[in-house]
Image (cartoon, rainbow, N blue to C red; front, side):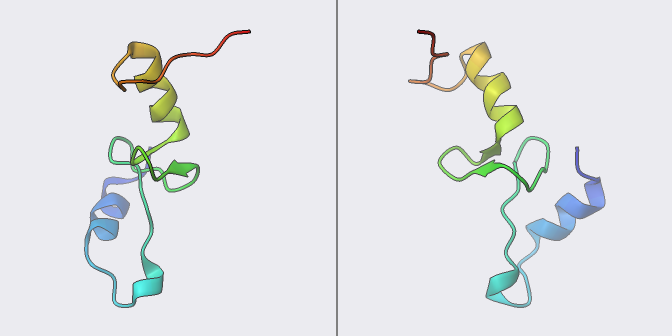
Length: 61
C-alpha cells in the first residue's frame, strides 16, 4: 500500500502533462495499473473473486 502522502500528492494536478501517474483508487499502487478498471492487478483480482466487477469471472479450462 502506498503512503498516504504519496497518494495525496499524486491526486494534485501535475506541473507538466507528462508527469501524470495513474494510481489504483483503492490502494494507491502505481505499477500494474489497469486503465479499464482504474485499479491495480491485486485489487482487481480481489474484487473479481468477490464478484464486485460485473461481467468478470474466474477462468477455468
